[in-house]
Image 1: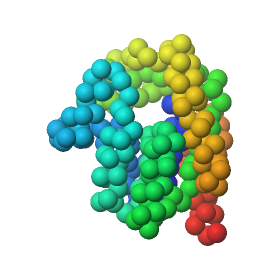
Image 2: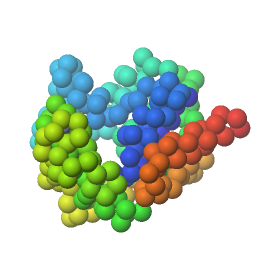
Image 3: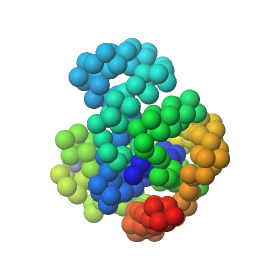
Image 4: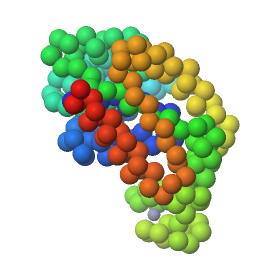
Length: 221
Ligand SMILES: [Zn+2]
């Protein structure tokens, strides 16, 4: 089983992806992690990717594709997060999977209204103790004592980029880049959108259950 996760920043893509992986025993392949791993291990691809990243530029498709395919070679059953990002990458992935007698089971697209993403992001606070890394939300998941981490007692702080302007920009970039991909997978008959209501205390469980139901339907058809 191979699943692709799509979703704007703030939709909880990483969290839901992790839950799906746990349920099906899939490997969670997040492109950001792959980059960091290759760079840390100083592989040829990692060095090349780092040249672009350190200049704030996008890593060219051929490097990203080579990295992801290098990982896919060793794995059976993955959930891809952050890849593909372009039609070129999607085409390359399709070809790669076909050559290895594999296929994409489904593309899950998490959909949260923009105003909800903005609201949730601006109300996020994180623990200032880097080793703790706990994260809270003043609206949805407040700490027991305002401004203080439940787990370690350190001060809670806001991330500099958790402000409305930055989020709006990030969303605009995301939609511009992802729209072609969404259309591509719609045409391939693989796209399934999951609408998320972030105001429920059990949003994570509900979204995970909906996603699993979609996957089950795909597997049984
Ligand atoms: Zn803490």
